[in-house]
Length: 170
Image (spheres, rainbow, N blue to C red):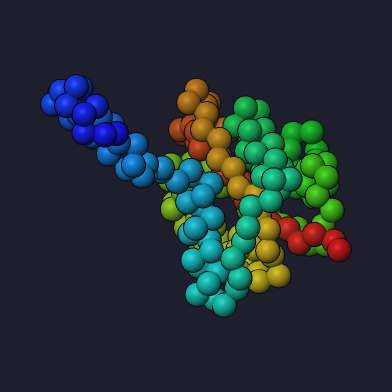
């Protein structure tokens, strides 16, 4: 803008213009999703053990979301769905052709950090996280506000977490 145009606009208009430029130039902070937080925590633990980082894979993400949603909506907690399908079938059903695959599930943990800690406290789940051959993952969290307690539970779980690990076939 030239100085004659600025004089015609007046001081108030110039102040508004400068404010708009500053607002548009300010980077926006975007909070990490629960899935991104889990990935960051898991990759930090893997790095300490000398493992490479896991990367998201859209097919594994879909398999994880399917299981998390099924557990939340169909009121169960387990690796095998109410339809009898296991995680390997869900992974294959998403078109992921794998050499190796594994699954971690958790429920009731309200934060990504608590879900990861629950997995690290479980020998089988910890083994999946620390298995350096895994390079890809899918992670999902489903929150069910109107969740009912599962049989044998006093309270509802509400938070359902799934992490699927995979190594694709060449």
